[in-house]
Length: 226
Length: 211
Image (cartoon, rainbow over all chains, first blue to last red; front, top):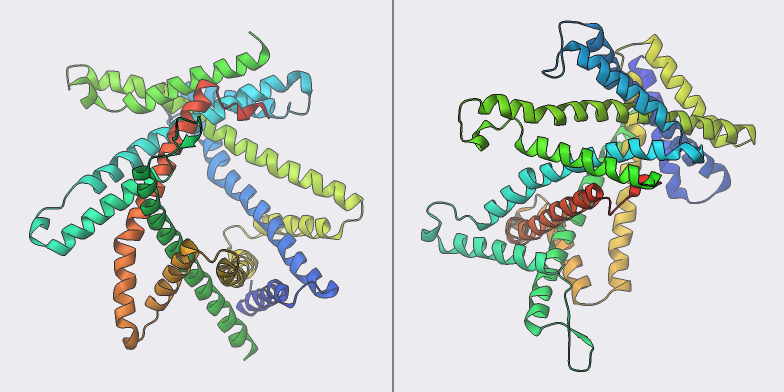
């Protein structure tokens, strides 16, 4: 596609999306909605292309090539795995038939629990242990720098109290009413302050990102107009 | 065992096998480096490897089925005279035609997908600023004040003005200490939640696959 055509299409589509700012005027809202549906159609098409080119095609090529093997079981095992995956894919199509939907559910169960297992291992080894270690460990030589040590202590206290904020255990008092301890309530308030601060910073960072993109789009519109 | 029980049993067996294989496989150090430990670790990694390959292909096929379902739904809507569904189908068909006739050419992505995506993201700016202003009107308490104060400090701290150097220092400290602590706690909470949700799915407590 020629560069001018790319710029013209970009210009028109950007204006179509920005027409949203003008509000719900019948003829103008058609432009915004059309842009959104164009986006949905293109995204579906690109997803299909990427899924075919990045996943299905390489696997198809691999099972035709006898010199490759996905596992230590050899090439013939690859054909069985691919065949089983195709069968599972066909079973997914049985969902509308109520009497056979348990077959689809079994396939979905396999997909969900394998995904869950990967997520559990990833959460344990990729987030939980490294983050706990990084929060609790003291860097070498930090004892000589008082302010750095205080910051480190604050990070530790903040992490622990913010985690405690999600702790909802209450005890029954003499009248049988639920009651939290005062100390726990104090920790929860400190934790909430850290969480609100974090959410505020994330919110501000998102505003900055969107502002940067908006500036880029507006400068593109002016450049094209010039 | 009922049909629902079969799905639950399959989930438990496959989940346990995958989890053990991922945790113990490909890690000979776990077996004390004794003779044959490498072969054992390789064998333990095998079920996880096979199941992951299988699931990746099934997920790819389910994406194709999902897109086919999207097209089927919109073809039905076009038959009922819905204009926007026709727009969606036309853009889908044009993109596929473009991909088939111009392989390796990413100009359609540059001309249409990226501008719409970035224009939509930039519209979010107005919603976020409006939402921030509404926080103070709807929730004028200590937490609302703290939230807005942090937003203002971080926004002012990002401005490249020499007069705002103290605010920049304050913003940097906020990001390095309290925000870092809160983010760590949120990430730890997500990780703990993931572990609990994963184990619940494996034990058949959370049967979202029943649909």
